[in-house]
Image (cartoon, rainbow, N blue to C red; front, side, top):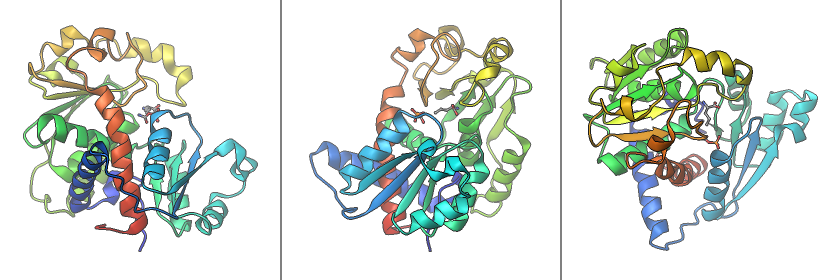
Length: 315
Ligand code: CP
Ligand code: NVA
């Protein structure tokens, strides 16, 4: 049976562990000059309805380096933009491709694709979730911090798609997560509920969740091992920019706020960043920042995801 990754709740705990190990292994081998080409003859389609720099190029280079072919399609250039139903597009593309990577607005769009495609569908960001981002970010935490167990991971900012995927991950992996958002910008209740429900079906069912939610960034960041932030207005929310700048006052990750975290804290951002808004220039460019390692690891994690889903290895 094919496997999709629409949200992190689609994975089993063992899948996470396998993907972390495999991505780290593929990275090591790539850096040693070893060429792994298990996807020769395979193709992945990338349908993007929103802008992207990192996700698109890291998926494309991942596929090329594994020996396969990526085919990029701007949604505007396909018949989707002329109202061809996604279920028809999904079935037609399944006759050509071995997997589909989709970035779009409404999460129900990737769900419809997954339901009708006979090939794996991978969510490359929707308004609701950004699962592959969090997989590569946890890989970065494992590399830099030696693991996520016993580490305090603090989100400072909007309760957005990236935050939602962190809440999903914390339900599956028993990591300590504190989400600090301004009032009115909290992670949606439906995300908290579906995460709790999914956790109750894992081996962690009887382990209390270590995820907490607050509107106080100062309280949240105390003794943090990892501080993560993201833009205040995500793609599609540009018209709310001015209002959000006012509502997010006090949520900039700057030197003052960071001084309450642990002295060896790492600062993460999925990028692109707005300097002087959610993060100060000196923190983004400072010694605690690991944002370029995060960007790099997207390629290695995407290799592991493509290989695993296309060849159905260990998943
Ligand atoms: N982090 C991330 O998804 O970046 P892009 O929007 O550039 O793909
Ligand atoms: N939350 C951001 C993430 C970009 C990678 C957005 O959706 O625009």
